[in-house]
Image 1 (cartoon, helix red, strand yellow):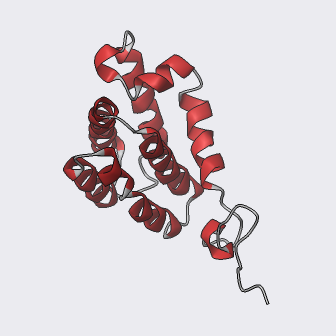
Image 2 (tube, one colour):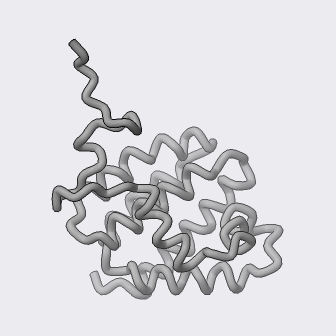
Image 3 (cartoon, rainbow, N blue to C red):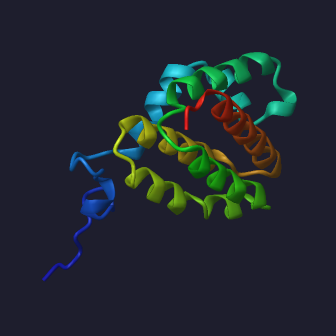
Length: 154
């Protein structure tokens, strides 16, 4: 008898569900933000190469716009806790170990925007593979936290 209850994507059935009971595909949630704010591939790639970016102001302007729209989806303390873990990461593998924490935060959220926000951060973490990308990602998260502090009402 087959006791494997994973779906065709290898995920357990409950792994893809939010509190609403509807399937919440993390990749699609992250894509909502990527398409809306970082559809320009060069701009998106610059998130991982800030030192060499020729459009740094535009990168930070897009981050600011993103955070403005998502600021009230997660609490300042939730974001600061995630950021504290990110700052401690010394390697890309250390960073990737944070991903389950992001999934936990997203799963506890009622708002789709919160799930999208956490899914986007998780998506960015998945793209980090080098020391330079890790450094750029930390700076990106520093900007997200700063803009969040400015725009969040909590």
